[in-house]
Length: 248
Ligand SMILES: [Zn+2]
Image 1 (cartoon, rainbow, N blue to C red):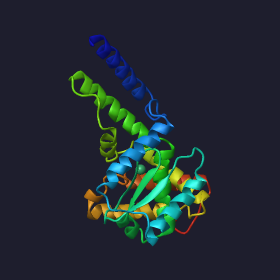
Image 2 (cartoon, protein in one colour):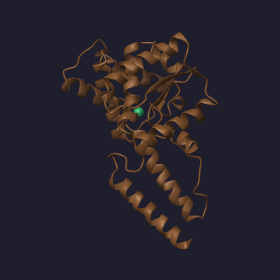
Image 3 (cartoon, rainbow, N blue to C red):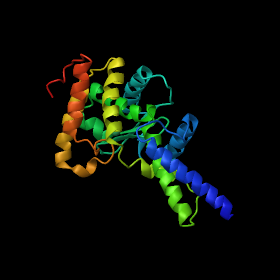
């Protein structure tokens, strides 16, 4: 038993080392099929309490926009799903492997503008596509399992519960910048106005001033909105992209 524990400890230490060394890179432990499975389990847990809607006109409108952007972003292919949550919250978030949740309060705040919604879909989709969500879970679970082992606690755990909590944490600055610019890229490839991101970020700034507590996932990020706006403007300029939201 002691030998087993030592081996596991060494494996975990190695894992943490790899994760630190690989910061900003791809995932090491959680493959594509595992990401899809983890995301499905987490979404099932989330939907036990969330007011999700897949059937109303607005839910289908959202899903259509998301799927247009997703089709433009292939490959690699994940089973993306864009699900409306009927709550007055200014947020959206993604689980690994495909499920993306979009709160109705955010759609209202964006004036139900399909171009702005498309960019948010592209932003969240990039967190899935580029495995940002999986990376975050790997590092969090790796450290958590290591701590549990060291204190002799249970190592078997409800992974979906952990993932649900981890989804509330922030992404890294680089991952946010990447999601912002690739969100522009995929939304534009799907035929939406590439400059709509500027309008969304301007709205975030206005709303954050009113109620910062609303912005824990998508908008409560390391880079401030000004830095994110500058990053998007640079991307638009470098790629000669224009549109009707440039003045925002
Ligand atoms: Zn993000």
